[in-house]
Length: 544
Length: 46
Image (spheres, rainbow over the protein chains, first blue to last red):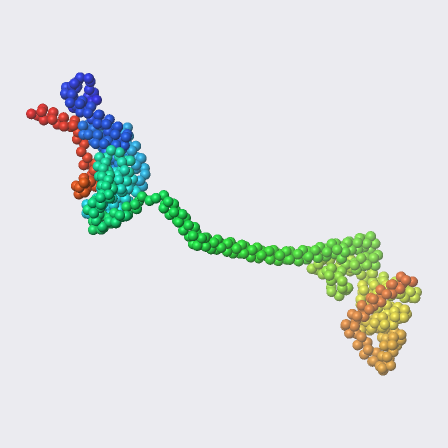
């Protein structure tokens, strides 16, 4: 304890040893203040909040610096719903003792929840409004407001008190009693609440006692029936059933059952169809999504099939190219023929027929064009789109050097065979000569002669015709023309005989006939026939 | 019987949060010790 005058620490002496002030009264005041604090603390512990407020206020009136008492007073105010009053006490406490003050914790805890503080403030405003309504005579409005207040702030004791008073004024003693009992759960020894509760109980008692005689009902509730209570609130007359609140358990159970049945019916007729419709819509949406995905997949599949077809055709084309390159008549085979021809030429340059035979195996065009027998000279050499430059150079070199000599060899051999009357062999060699040198008149003449001597007048006539038409300046042209005019070659054929019978036997007629036979198309046919005849001749030789 | 009007007069508006500052300023914090000091000062002056 410190001296109130100088602030020095006091001793057991009845005066201040520092300033000499008499501290006997001061000590009594402090002692009494502490007693009040203890009393307030005890009341607060047993929830006698209003009693605690009285004691703590008395304590602080004696000694305002009792920080514990002030903090406890704020706590009690807060418990009674008086938040602003609580804050005021805590702020003062904090002002008096800035450090190590529990009021800090109280305020911090409340301020950390702004929503709660706002709700409390809102409830206080409504309480003030309800009080204003009550003073204006609008008791019903005041009751409504107070009910809202108690929902928001169930600890606001003054709201219970006011609502109890309003119920008492309305002679709703049961309600008043119930509300006041709720207030007592917060503040057990609230004098005003106890007073109102006593009035409510007396009112209830008087009502029940009055029911026996009927006197009170006639005085205060003249028009009420036996089942209802009638009272006037402001300008309104309110009729309330006596047992409206207190209901039997059986009726409650019945209501619950009815409510359950109604709920089930609502589920069946309102909720379930909506849920089913919602589920159907959801299913339709999902079906649509799946259908869209299926369409996309189908489009992908079609695209992939088109790609497969394109790749298949490309594969076939490549396979064809591979066949061209590696097949029996492919490029590899052609290179082999050229290499063999070159090797044969190097080994024996005089074996021109062998080299030429190998060169003849090389077609001038592609593999597909190979099926048609073509004359190399007629198209001017190998196809540059198929053969490389080196291939063509080597081929041309060999062919230029070998072809003329090979033709000469075949012709010489053919003539020798003709003279030895080996006509079929002569025909075979001379045909090869004509293939190599298609404009060699000597080869054609002896070929025709060989056919003639072999009895093949048709091919003989064709060979003579060729000399006459294509090699007119040849030394053999006159002989060929003479043979044609003599019809020697046509003796064996009925067609030739018919021509001889119908046509005049003059040189001009022979020339006209030869002119007809010189048609380009006929020449090509004749050439093919000659080649076919040569093949047949070779077969006959083989048979012999 | 309760006199409603008289009872109603005993109720006072509860201070709101907006009025907290004025409530704190209006708080009477004088105590008995202040009274003693005041009396002693008057005695000394006399």
